[in-house]
Length: 238
Image (cartoon, rainbow, N blue to C red; front, side):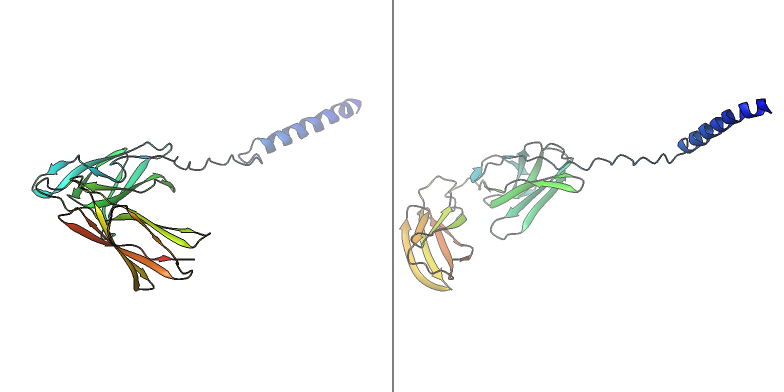
């Protein structure tokens, strides 16, 4: 009897140890699984070529397409990006003319000669993206005779709150490096209120502008032999 009593506590201890050990040996140990790391967002990066607001003099001729040039666009590598979407827009029509997906940091684009384009690149890593800035460039023309000047672009409106003067600036270029002049018509709420002839600087000031009115310009760029005309975006003066 004494021996039995002496052995009993040890039996309970062994039973408790086995019981605890059994609970801890299962597949569910009560610990939360470590969360998986999320997808890293691509880092910021810069466009490299074609250069912004310049005539791209490079580009190989495309076989059987005399009006086309093959231009190799380049940009910086974006950390964490696995691929890139390249978008090219015809500035005159606003239509996307090229959309390329690539894992490289360059790609060939077949584009029309003598045309103003806007291009940008989107870096992608699964569901995360990072967009570049948008650049503009011109493709070179045919290289014979006088080139028509490129239309005005990057037209911007600025308001000086102290005097209500509305300043409008734009950019223009000519492949022959001719001196350019500008004829400008100013519209307020669809009514022509002013005009300028043979401006040498790509900007004007609209004095006495009216808050709440809508403004736009019609800009004609001339190189003395030929010209192009562009309507600006509509600007609502707040």
